[in-house]
Image (tube, rainbow, N blue to C red; front, side, top):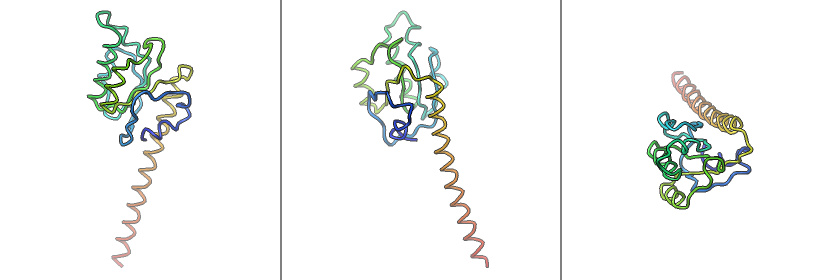
Length: 155
């Protein structure tokens, strides 16, 4: 699933795309992180959802520097993007961070605070699975046609 297909889902109706939408990149998984060390389990292609609770865990740094550090890890791990519920833990996305993400081609979406996490996770996961099933069916069709062709040649 690509960015355009992601944004077409019903759960993204009242959301705002804050930074660039990487059109060529594909979402492989969706995950939710609010733990300070949750980034340890991220993989390439992950679309990460969060409230940003982890930015309050380090009293020595500002939430802006914690958020920047987190996003740098997401970019390093080649994650697809970040969906964040702005308000409770992250009051806004700083302009410097927006510029940085735009330069890196990293997507940030401001999510609808009223929409439940289960709806985001469920709808995105179901759509990813639908696309994977379509790919499997297409490969199976190619295999069956090739197999039929080989059988016909032997006759």
